Image (cartoon, rainbow, N blue to C red):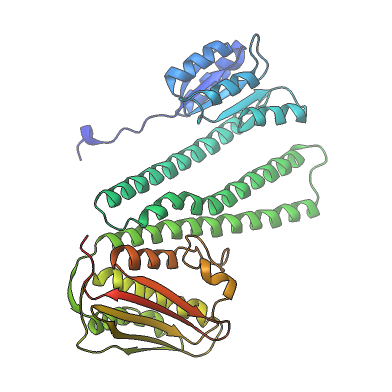
Length: 403
């Protein structure tokens, strides 16, 4: 890569709205030294105009100004189409908690108290710029998933995946929301301990131990939820790749099922469970072996993870037979824990799971249902009793509908 090809990373733009020339000059000098592009405004009207055209990444907004105060200015920014997502940090000498509540209600994300320390200003600016970048990346990802949905629908490939694209943002809300809550709480606790440290009384050992305990809890919450969000995105990408690359061809059903069971061996060999296959060797289908294999794999994994959870042995039977002229019945059966009667009508609904919060996303059986009905042209039924095991039965045409 030559010098002309080096990508140019734009400097973050910060709009400062303050009627005090001395504060403007001080902030301009210090923030430019740290690589920010600064836009200045001395009145609220001027600030609103510059926010519209400069498209800042963040706004530092004085609360007490003539004509229009900072709170009203913030409300107008949040009402603007081009400025509604720009984070606003208030600068004020006010210490009344009610004023802070008013600021947050107006749409502000943080406060800087005058007279300020530049280190605090920089820390808060960098925190909210990082949050905004993360939010933009999330929006870009959602937009990408939305485009993927449109392509799938347009090409008549797995229309059911559209529901996943629409729902992925909802699925990510919980871990990301928990992470933001933990980081905000940790920031407040850090600010509190900093005030104690810099105060005349200092801090006690008990206060510091309490802070360390809260810090560890915050880090644990952040780690678990961010890993969860990453796993959701990774799994979704894999689902999209697997299910949109299907090819229709003739195949022996026994060979396809045996191949999929073989891919499960690295997982199965670490468990005490056994998979047995009862499929006539000569049973031929003209269908989509990729999606069919994904369905069977998902049902087997479901039996291992849920049906036999906490058990030391178990058998999973995969069997098939000709059920009528041109139709095949394929079943996956276990003798595990079973499913509660009241849950059976909902098990194929998107995001329904009895494992919420402990690893279940509620997407697996919904994907299975969509593949069976939309791609393979069949239907899926379930029979289960608590303590009596579960049997999923697929009724499939030997020749799947053309797509």
